[in-house]
Length: 424
Ligand SMILES: NC(=O)c1ccc[n+]([C@@H]2O[C@H](COP(=O)([O-])OP(=O)(O)OC[C@H]3O[C@@H](n4cnc5c(N)ncnc54)[C@H](O)[C@@H]3O)[C@@H](O)[C@H]2O)c1
Ligand SMILES: N[C@H](CO)Cc1c[nH]c[nH+]1
Ligand SMILES: [Zn+2]
Image (tube, rainbow, N blue to C red; front, side):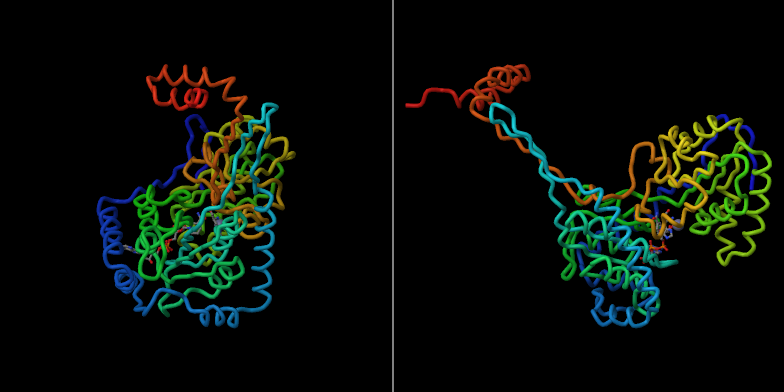
């Protein structure tokens, strides 16, 4: 791994893929086709892009039952336990409606309502991610969303993976369709004969999925455009080089475009982690992907002290940050920008990817500067509540009318004043 000692102007080398003109045009054509031809287009695109001819997109109950039968009972229990942890964590995020009553009888408040319907995209092209099913569906369930439709591309056998189906059932999805890519996003946004349109689409996917989400945004809401995975480890002297290397590689193996960065105050540790990464890389089944990620997007920064390290982390604003210092909680006090923060050597990043409870759908590409992990709020909306009393309107009506006339809006002023005119 490259060791860099000059941190001035450092940045994570990231792959920001906004697609080619050709890809954008292809996605627009796919969306138009689905809007025009509905299910027939979904079947055609599935044959073209996934290489499998399906009769219909809806996954029948028997295929879900087969998935449970196929899966080891221990594995089902582990998915169930992860789901319980994720639910418990997200339950804590749930906000309630609130009202205040003022002495003059005015009531003001905020009413929270879950979205009516949500579509969850689960990637399925190169790998299946049951954990992403849990991370997207459970917060929506906790929010109280009534209708959740899940979509994911089928494998060559025309089916979804057993892990994805089991996770979907455990999370509480009732409607699953085996369709992926831009065509699935279009079906969720605009509906077909058998897929009802939804209000919001969440979930990661490849460039075609990302471009389609951008394209339909406005007609429906979307969560975010998640980029390739990123990890930054901030470590001081005395930390374990082999564990740090393993954590860096855990994200590098996701994607050749993923980035893995170590920021350390210790020159010796930098050298050891670099050697460990090289040693461990050659033992990984996904060596090829991880090696490309490390060579194109990996780096080790050696900083003068922890203060400089913390500043650098804030500049990088990573998706995942591991703090491995003598006092991780004290170090964390200076961190302002990171999607998820993992403290101490027993909080390895995969603990958060799979099991602890917090969401693994996190802001990437430096967007942790202004955005948050996927959470229950994303599946709820707020309505402001205003119930003015007669006394309050009498006391404040003049002021409201004045403000309206300041903006040249006479009808606004009169709407208030008409309430105090003498009636015949
Ligand atoms: N951030 C996260 O939490 C997270 C989690 C899991 C996966 N991911 C990311 O999601 C992505 C998954 O990508 P994937 O490809 O494996 O699965 P995918 O399901 O996103 O995409 C597969 C679909 O792409 C479409 N497609 C393929 N080639 C096409 C073409 N030439 N023209 C039009 N459409 C085409 C097909 O319809 C296919 O069904 C990866 O980048 C991965 O890193 C992110
Ligand atoms: N680390 C990924 C998000 O960046 C999420 C994930 C899914 N499975 C394993 N990891
Ligand atoms: Zn991961």
